[in-house]
Image (cartoon, rainbow, N blue to C red; front, side, top):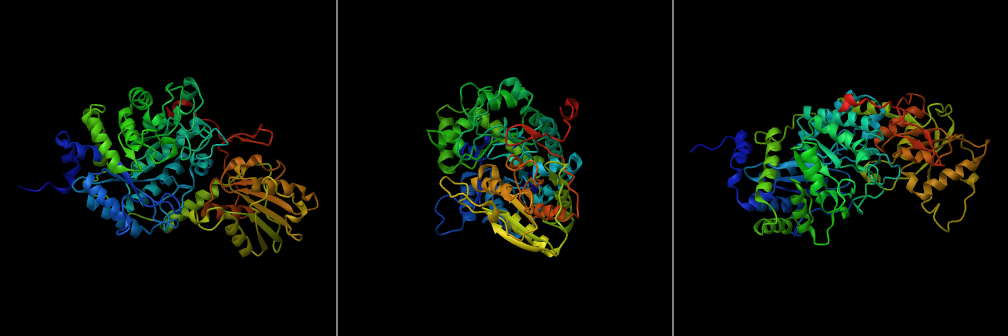
Length: 572
């Protein structure tokens, strides 16, 4: 009997799905993680003392008929494209006749899993500052080509959350902004760009994580809004993304009483997943949980029951449960006990296989000839970074005094390994190369803490400095950075000129006196730092458009959104 052609494997599997064994069916609904989510973090499963992590994951894939794997780098520095391809190849070899859906979090900006040699594209908020949906689509397309080059065919992007809460600790610049219709236009463009590259997109974090003040990695957020408020706000980008053809939707770990008064997290809420996403919005693609090892996903009954509850709610794919084998057994028992419907799991598996077929995984799951970190890609990302530079107040631009002036660059970086050199150091290096005498100063980590002695503002800066550049990085939640800015205000009119560069969060705007010039980067990346340096040197203009409302120290909106909202017909 002739063997099934390689290009027909997924289609053939989908046609015979009803005859699958229960363990094979359930395994297809799980996506494991390989690599490290954060420096020092461990994602390996089982006993890895005698074998490497990839083999440990491959072993579970092989034995439990796993349907997907989420890639993370093996270290903070990231993996070479060759190593990523090797990892994907080994995992796909273990998958047997049905290829894996290889996923990753490649949002770009502050969340990127492709690092060594890959292009560093700007964050969603930085791209939104360009006010150019065509550029958003193009950058997503180029990013998708790099993903496909290393065998990753499914990205957990774009973020469709409307970041309307300045104190949001987890979304921030991952969101395109604070205006729902502007966010919708950006999301639609990214979905289209990824589709052009042959990569599946994911809208997240449904039904909306942008107005929360709790990080779901650490706790359970509450979305405080009425149903009508949700429909006129958080819902708009998700609706636009679905109309643009988004392949999947990630359910957030958050409670939304207006959508499910029971208080059950959305991950486990049938009214939200099935009643709202499926029945009301008409989505029949892949619904995936956010990572089930996050604090916001924990149930007292344990991870096995969490997986059962998510599937019962209508989710199709379980992402990164801490005990995959135990959880698979728990799901199988739930089906055997009648607590889960086999037909519903068949429908979920069919959605998984339908997406794999649409991506052509039965024919080919990697194309190493596609461009990865090419000069053309780097140049396009760099030009986008320059275009995203935005003055907090366009009426207060600033540039360095002529060389050989003495410049002090102040700042610190808590986890530079994830992004390369700290923004402070890149700025200092580029400025020095332009002929300036540059001093680098580290922000005192103890400054601003309770009981810390007051500092003399005049001693903050080098006495002979002609100008000071202060780099903040999410300073709104760091007492040391807040204290530094307050001290600089005491330098007086005869002191050096001061300019603030907000490397990541634009909401640092509330920390600095409104008379100070402040340059917004929307993400602490290397290309962003070099773009900021070019603006400070007067080589480029900062022409970006403010994509969020910014408040001053009194809480009043002092610098409003600079983008006009698009009309309903443009996105819905």
